[in-house]
Length: 445
Ligand SMILES: [Zn+2]
Image (cartoon, rainbow, N blue to C red; front, side, top):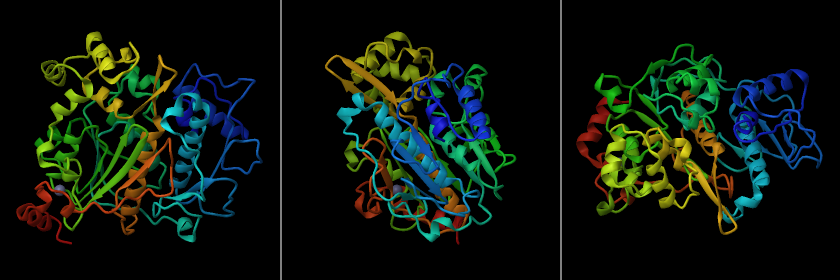
């Protein structure tokens, strides 16, 4: 995971370890970035993953089972091989701490804080020392028909982890109409420049990652509306979408369970929705608290991008982004002139999603940098994967929302207070007796 993230971000990477591992990771780094320098003589910010070292490494991460942490913990004899979740978390942690060190001068205004504490468990989402429960073997994973909705950065990160699991007993659909483009590569784990050159379907690059855990995921090259129009349906949805309105639409199909990953600047999180019960559904989670403040997707994109409304309608209808569009967006968001030029000719939705996963950092008065944060979506995807594995392993799901920062964290408390229906003023379908009866008819158990 660390190499997968670093090779998308830095131009020089020196990998040390046993020969077979170095050969494997070097090959992967070169596939991600053919011009990466793997032989630099001078190295900075060394990172140690999974080995005990002294103080020569500024970052040292360890993992076992569901758990990962900093320092030199060593889980002797732990059955790490079957559970890839803790090691994926360690990989994200390693890159996150490296990122803070390497980009320290330009991150200062965002208040970065080095990670500290005893470690974190994806089993109960708590900051704590490793416990026996983290080391329990995963059972055979079995689940109801499930669909990953949105095969973007979060979807690729979830698949990157899920693909390392033992063969799963359950049907999986992948739903996304788009193809891979050059601008996706920095945040899409598992992709290479060839995928962009070949205009590969995102569902195909995701399916490649999921092998061998899922021998034959079903590819649906549609958006959600197209998927539903054709009569497709899934009992469990893994939501990895860009927009609030797209997320809200998922809930109306009344799936049994929705697991939703999200990113915002340097923050990411997870929400989990059963629909019945006291907790908010995905729809009201993405509705503003004030009924009068509900804004539709069009208005949200207009206000975020600062473009003329008529032009936004054209862009949403399929027009490509032009240089004048991009200059306008840069001015509106206070970005450096031409910093978005690589989006020329692309469609507006991926740019909108991309801007939701970037941190803008400032140095001095006149210099500004836009720093895409690939580890934000990597961790969001990992949270989705970990929650889904808990479901597939028949463990009790903790449904409190999760939120954490990768610049000021990961922090000591990922869980927020429960988001209750009663605390939301909007009249939502999850309070509607007809929808609730429909849900209970559909999923009586
Ligand atoms: Zn609701």
